[in-house]
Every structure is written in C-alpha cells, then in structure tokens.
Image 1 (cartoon, rainbow, N blue to C red):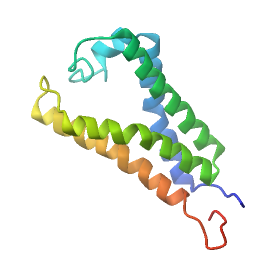
Image 2: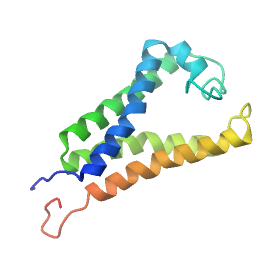
Image 3: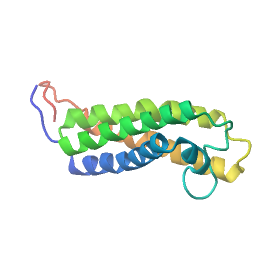
Length: 146
C-alpha cells in the first residue's frame, strides 16, 4: 500500500491533543495524590469530586494518559496518514468510554454548570479525533491511501 502524508492541520491538531494527555499523565504518574486533589489545576477539582483517593488507580490512570499522549505526539511527528489515523483511533478508545461514563454519571458534588461544561469538553474529545480518523483513513478505489 502506498503511503502519504496526513494533512498538515490534522497533524497539528493531533499534536495539540497530545499535550494535555502528556501533561495530565506525567502529573498523575509523578504525584498521583496532588493530581487527584488538584486536577485540572483551576476551577472545580474534577477528579477529587469522585472520592476516595486511590494511589494505584491514580497512577495507572496517569500511565494511560501518558501512553496516549506519547503515541499521539509521535504519530503527529511521523506524519504518515495511516499512523495519524491509528493514533487518533487510540485516543478514541480512551475518549469514548470516558465520555459515556461522565455523560451517565455526573458528579454529584459539582454544579450542573460544571457537569455540562465537562460534558461538552469530553464530547469534543470524541469528535475531534473522530474527524482526524475520518480524514486520514480514507482509501482510494485502488486501495492506496489518499
């Protein structure tokens, strides 16, 4: 199969999606309790809204964020269409269940406004990588990547 470069905008967007994954993941791995009590670092503390703290779980969650961030960043730098699509699909594997959980379980300790903002931010975290997958996974009739 012939390979081609991903559209420049999709590489930049994928790199942009990698940044919060990398920051969140590194923070949770290096200092899981601070991450739990402080995430996102401003406004309502979203993770602490669902007690109790579990160091193992927080560190493991951070590892997942870190892994998806590394893969997304490397794919954006690599730039090949199929690799970019696969990395975006990996982000979706995280984003879809994350969105579904929060959509069905708004945090009781957060205001309705915060829960709605969280809903739309997490929905965007699904729609943006979905667009990247769609644009980069298209195949021509000859079986070559566009």
